[in-house]
Image 1 (cartoon, rainbow, N blue to C red):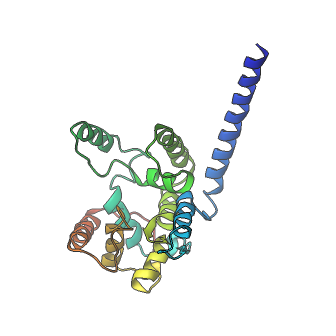
Image 2 (image 1 turned 180 degrees about the vertical axis):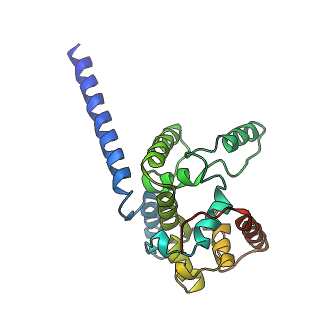
Image 3 (image 1 turned 90 degrees about the vertical axis):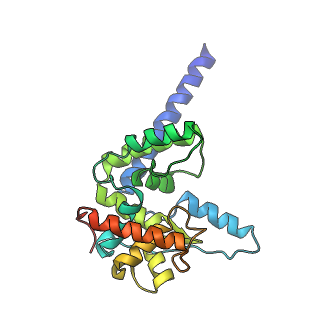
Amino acid sequence: MKIIRWIGRVILKVTLWFFGISIGLVILYRFVPVPVTPLMVIRLADQAFDSKKEMRLYKDWVSIEKMSRHAPQAVVAAEDQKFMDHRGFDFEAMEKAWENNKKGKRIKGASTITQQTVKNVFLWPSRSYVRKGLEAYFTVLVELLWSKERILEVYLNVIEMGEGVYGIEAAAQTYFNKSASKLSQSQAALIAAVLPNPRRWSPARPTGYIRGRQAWIMRQMNNLAPLGVGA
């Protein structure tokens, strides 16, 4: 019985520590820039052990007010057009993904911008059920404690946009030699077009497929209601 009580106390303490730290981090990152993400650390480690790669971590935090208004509009058009309306989960897209997976097909779009932000900021790349459970937990927290504007701001500053390139400012400087505040609609759409696989595709060398995605994203941007964020 003593061992059972001891195990119970340990589990309780670990649980309380987990909730305290996780909620504290979410509150902290509501106000301060995210300094580094697990994915950035993993990519740096991969580069360090690969003689063919250079060590590269290019990021430069910029507030959403100093971004071109086209930047948030482009990623919403490309990745999550229901972003302003849902509470972190697109259940319709999730149901479609589930049905198509059962048929052996894959469908893009089940992961929302909030979920992608959570995966980048708080978690590690994985497809395990544990990671999925933590993703759902942090998604609920972030939607409760952050504004939609803050979610977009963090997403646009931490998302991988190329080999060693993270965030919209670094992408704008790398691919167009200008600040994120100066991005045109077509440039923002081109950056958003490569987000499904930014290590395979590059805005600097767009393929025909990427040009097609860019054109589609621009059409979607024109159909979206104004987000009310950005410059």
